[in-house]
Length: 118
Length: 110
Image (tube, rainbow over all chains, first blue to last red; front, side, top):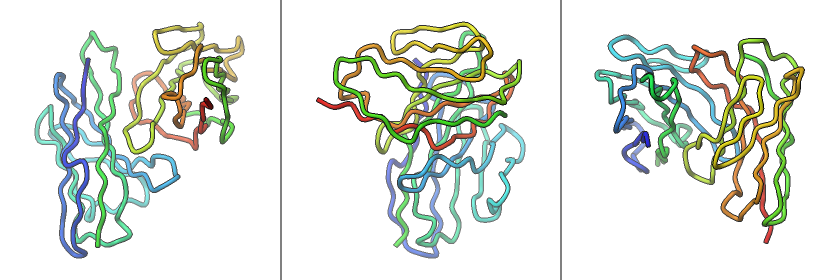
C-alpha cells in the first residue's frame, strides 16, 4: 500500500540552529502535502499546506519565516525549522494526498519526527 | 468544515466491540466523515470513511445516522493493539486539509 516516510524519525539540535525534516511519498505522486505539529497529550495542529511547485500556505499563527517548507518534487516536501528554540520541540507529522485515480484522493500520514531542541 | 465532538476517553474489554461515537451536527451535504487513529508516538492511521451509507472494511464498521448528524465507529473485536486515540474528522470531498479535534482515547483492557 501507499507509504509516506519521514526522516529523521527523531533529532536533537542545539538552540539557534536549523533542522530539516523530510517527507517522502514512496509509491505515489503527492501534489499536496501537509505539515502538522503535535505537542504531548494534544491533538495534531495543522501548520501548512505544501503544494508541489508553488509556495506553501500557512495556517494562521504559524510563522512562515521560521518554518520553511519546500515541495520541489512530487514525492518530497521538506520542513526546515530555522533558529530552533526549546519551545519548538514537538512531534512533526506530514501527510500526503495520493491524487491517483486508484486511491480516490486518499490522505496518508508519515510516521512523524520528534524534534528536541536543547 | 464541520466541527466534531467526541468523548475524551473510553474503556473497552478485550474481545468485545468498541463503539466510538462522534457528533457532527453541523455537517453539510457534501461533507464526508473520516476516522483515523493514532497509536502512541506514531502518525495517524486511516481507518474508514463514509458519506451517508454505512461502511465496513477489514478494520472497522462506520454507522452514520440517517440525518448524518452523528456517527459511530465500531471495532468488532477489540484487541490490546487497538489502544489509541481515535479521531473523527468531517471534510468536504475535494479538500484535503484535515482539522483534528481532541479525539477519543480508547483503552482496551485485558
